[in-house]
Amino acid sequence: MSEAQSVSFGGRTLRLSNLDKELYPDGFTKAEVISYYAGIAEALLPHVRDRPVSLFRWPNGTGAKSFVHKNVAADAPDWLRTEEVHGKGSDAVTYAVLDEPAALVWAANLAGLELHVPQWRFAGAGSAEHPAEALPPDLMVFDLDPGAPADVVDCCAVALRVRDLLAEDGLTAWPKTSGSKGLHLLVPVQTTDSATTSAYAKQLAQDLTAELPDTVLWRMARDARPGKVFLDWSQNNPAKTTVAPYSLRGRPSPTVSTPLTWDEVAACEKPEQLVFTAPDVLARVADLGDLLADLESSAQPLPERAKRP
Image 1 (cartoon, rainbow, N blue to C red):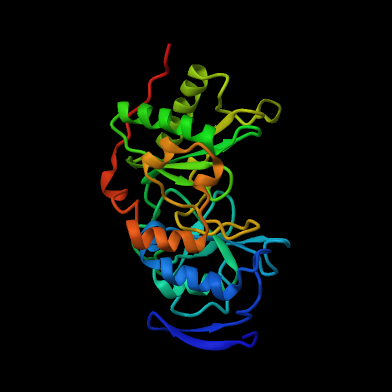
Image 2 (cartoon, rainbow, N blue to C red):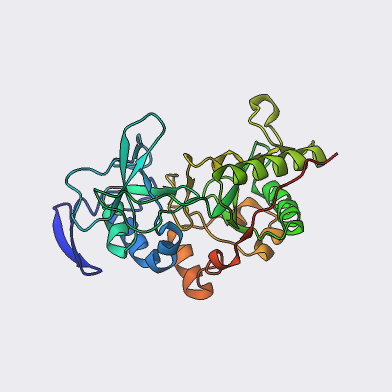
């Protein structure tokens, strides 16, 4: 199994290698990583569709060094969709856009365990003469990160309050685990200006910190982190990314950023209740379907959030 071999998948031919290589200390192999991404493709692909993907790669396994892969290599298959992103004052970066099952397998074969995407999409495919246009963000994201001894149980309590504050403004929050220590809340929105999601999210985080000063932080203050939940609003910058739903994480075991029900969030009493590995998630999706299936259709206009007195 260590020799490279060609396989046909999703109407594409791919060259796979080192399939028996252990990418996780618990023995989870590259073949199992590829199998997971092939099996979860139907649920995962809608959440990365038309978004540039940054691959977090662990070619020697999660016990070794990783690196972020943005620019697509010249030897990438010619069928792989790529799009250019022009940053301010920097050269263009050519990103992969994973819009078919074979593209997920291609990324997995590179030991691209984590898939990170921004909160915006391209307006269709571009060309060399006419690069694809970047649309305004269609998501607002909150990353709830606990500072020990706080844990994901504390994040759940904060998430419920964030959900209620958003609902007051007509917005719907969709929870998922980070696949690591905390929670992510995805909030589908309609806006024409990328600055509005960042401004709204910052104000909400400030409001909740004022309401729950012993529990919540809105700014990264290392010395204040212990025992509190950092409500990170800053990932709403168009240049930043968040791990995609159903992405594996580069942890000691193959944990997954897993969509949740609000009932699961409310019922969480121990951190292990919200730890899901690749096999767990495949079974969950087979049983529950994609819990984020209606996320995009629930988008509402993003209002201004007035500062509270």
